[in-house]
Length: 370
View 1: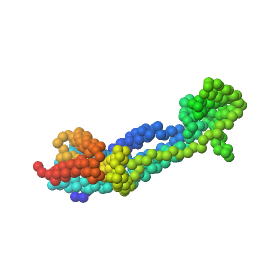
View 2: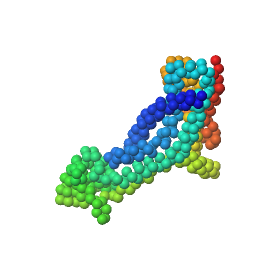
View 3: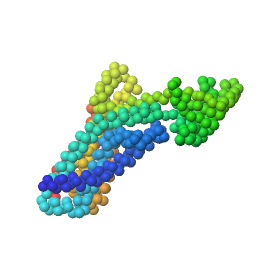
View 4: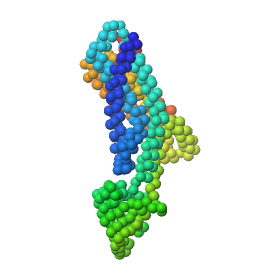
């Protein structure tokens, strides 16, 4: 009898893994696109892209696992129903509950794994991602890596830089225009036929050759200076400060912050502190709620898929859509946006999981009834 549960679990694993890979691949692409304004793609290497994918994975996996596992269940049971295998098992006296309990046990394991990923993997991934974006890439930036043919805003002094072309072998920049803002609101404009970044003992410099400098002042007077060579010192590239995000904290750190902020709010209520405290409580509720979705969705979908009332996989896809949309709507309704005590916030957020678990286990208990 153990062979049949293992067979069912194998049937679930194959489509679940395929769906997981497809959805995760799309989700990683969307995450990278969402941060496209922060990423200078010219500075990214294939290794950097691989690291970004790795850093996104813990957050995405914890969110994707519940739905992919549910879809694996529905596709597998839909195939078993379509091939009349479930009918054969019932005719052989095998109760459907014996097929369902191992599936729910795996749901419990996946819920524990999703919680661990959110509590450990997600903070690690976000911190590493911020280090790559805000520190590593920022220190690589230099004028000679800017894209030719486009006006760029460069460095802490907000220089405007336009490069007509670049010789990749020598690193020489062609037809460069450099606009440097001054304190009186004007810009000094450098134009050079050639330019190159050089590293000297005093730091990096931009050497301009065969050009001229236009220097207007606030009174409208314009001075012009032609030069065969001119050196402009470049700012030292420094990393930026990454934003503080709740997603980069573990559950223990979130609870510590919530307790500290609750004490501050009790003594000095303020709208800004209230908003921060509400956000902290909602994040804690999310960390506890979402991992349970693995078990909740499996508990609801498995007994429905085990007793199909339609033509195999078509019925399974319909059930999957209905269950997924219903759970998502309940999850949205659980995020009230109200300023409530911590455990009240958690209880409301857990409503969808609780409802799915109660209904799912009830259906499982009655699944073998005629």
